[in-house]
Length: 298
Image 1: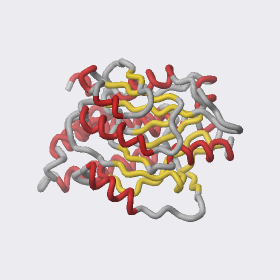
Image 2: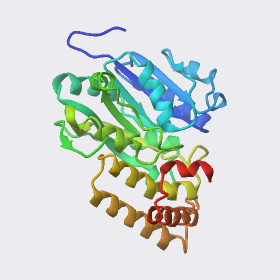
Image 3: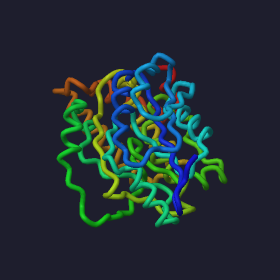
């Protein structure tokens, strides 16, 4: 690794599942970075999820690490492999501004009390039908960042773009919770909150990008996700990493949204499946059977 005066080393880490083509586009797009990563990891859920030949369009080295199916498992494989000072998790459909890595380094050098930093998402296709790659590029090109960098306290990093200071992770053996299977709803919250004793979690407006929210394979079916919307919150609260009011508020919002929209669901969302999963999780909660791992049997 090459490290400049007063600088830090950075690893980019991307977990992926079932989105081979968008992964190749995203990694090629990362040629835009004015500051290159010192390490670059990709962990697919299956070997066929990566077009190894396609990755040759990236100017640096990309290390493909095999890992078990499930976002926490995949991210833990990359945490274990990381030798850098900062590990930067990107989703396989997140397009960062050209100065993203440079700004991450500047931030973590100047603010040693920051443990987790998440960026400003200019547009988030995960909240709708998703954005096309070209549309994401156009939104990024049109963005005008603030003249003065601003930091905001935040409860957790957003998993699509989340920079972690790795020293306390190594020292205290902090990992993503593998009891949250598959897409692992709210695994970013659980991981972030484990770092609270050691420093700050912030949203940094100078870290900017577009989350395409690609609606393709690799995401949990509606019933599984609906179960996770309830079960994962309760599980994380019982660990002490989420207050009850957030469990209640988030659960009520999800159930209400799935119920109302199930009468006229969006084409890209399995609302009825999600509602079925919500209700099954509530039943399991009241009968003492609730466990995030129950979705493994669905």
